[in-house]
Image (cartoon, one colour):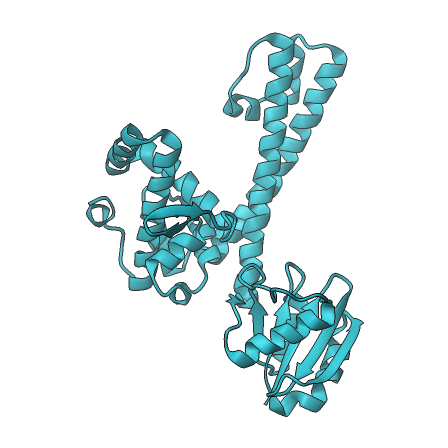
Length: 337
């Protein structure tokens, strides 16, 4: 049996193949070219257990290409891996060999590989989030300009309704008005692109049972249901509801010993898009659902609004997990019992 580790960088890859004794049979740095890497692996193909790829962002082409050629591929979870302690020297070849070593021992922490079609739709949802955040920056910029120039601060909704013709009625200096016009032009463009992306996302998700189930949860509408569904992927990859809540960053990251807190782990470990979606859902749920509001108010009375919102988001995350895994509709009594 042989084991392969690939340390993937922005413009090159280090490919290492080892045997059952960790003896290095191949160690080569090569350009990021699929055909070159396939040629290197070809002599070892029949004996390769799997190929491990370590990358933080640019792995699609390599993982998909290797899987299309019939290789078993593992995507290393870079956050969960701990390097050798006490090593005096480490380089890319050592890193790639370490991947093969962990694979041989069966202790390699892996990440989830979304199917390419699902991944494309998920990335489109992430692009929408990026554009929405950009739009928010321009809305806030207009708010700040008007607050400085007029002493009033209109709401975000009012700013989104502003037309170029309205700027002349605000009594702004010519250069200030030009700055506002620039922001409004970008907001209008972003509105158009966000609408196009949302139409495609709805087209790709509206017939899926998971999407319909998630929409029945208080606070979760069309867009949030799409994001939660696509970011979750195959829910069976989470053994327990706690694993999913942790992945959604809805639980505290802390280390305890003998009942005492000894420190905190990586609070950013998990899915940033899921935690954003569940926090948004919690904010909507406490405004429009009686049971969610009562839960929020009880938590707020004991702590504060931030902790209460996070607790409500945790509740919604747990409900989402059970609904997706069991194929059941939302049960408000079960959620807020």
